[in-house]
Length: 376
Image 1 (cartoon, rainbow, N blue to C red):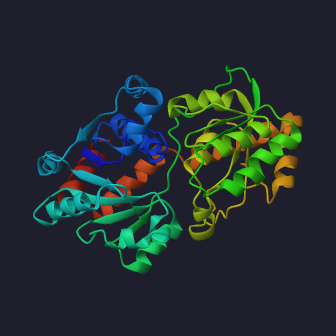
Image 2: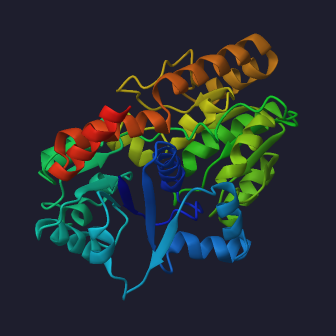
């Protein structure tokens, strides 16, 4: 089958974590013999900022790192109807322009035989719900929400026909343990500053514990204002700037521990939804300590896969224990990796996607799935 993904960007992961998951899903579809194409807007915010930050040559690195993935840009003159006519399944991300979201829905309503899904991986449904409410989703066959609390929000508001929980996951051909990499640092955190959504949390669960323990610590990410960089420096933390997602496994492998610091809107309004970095870190076999969030869907085994810290003192205590106790560190790494490989890979999510398509897909899609299953 041919899958068409409307995304903010596939090529750029500059402050754009959805690209991580989409790359893994498209890779897995390709490995199964399906075709997948991403369409991203010309002049997209993430891709433009990546070029400004790293230079235009950085895009070539993406295609070297992901040689099987295909992405095209579209402008105001792009023939979306022609692209849609060639697709069996169309998945539209919630950062797509609302007018285009409506246009794609009309194409489905006006005789389109493709299955049309809307994919939401953000907190706007609760933090800026008016923007989601105004989107024309009635013609979409289903909604893919990246957590159960977000799914319930769509159902309660009556947005869309049918809503499924479709969590993000680790692209395990990329995110895997690299035991050959020498460990040169103690703590690494990979994440963006977050528009004030976790400033206090980063101070409490990252900067202060690193300063108190005198750790050899590194932060990678973008959009850090001058005052944040000054705070990192006072804590003795090295700031390394942007890192390509393809380079993250080696960065994890070079350090002995990492932390998870979720954004406040997810903790308060959409509990149970971790960032994709939790899946990716555990897939790399690095011990992880997390700031508080509620694992309401039992995605992991807290205390075995990773440790929770309720405050800064407990974060420092857990990090000290991991760094001083190889048995504890190895146990966390093994358990976290086991959970990812058993439940949370992009291959698992593609399996789920095909189950969803078997349930709500068009006759054309269901016939193709039945043919593929019979051929296996």
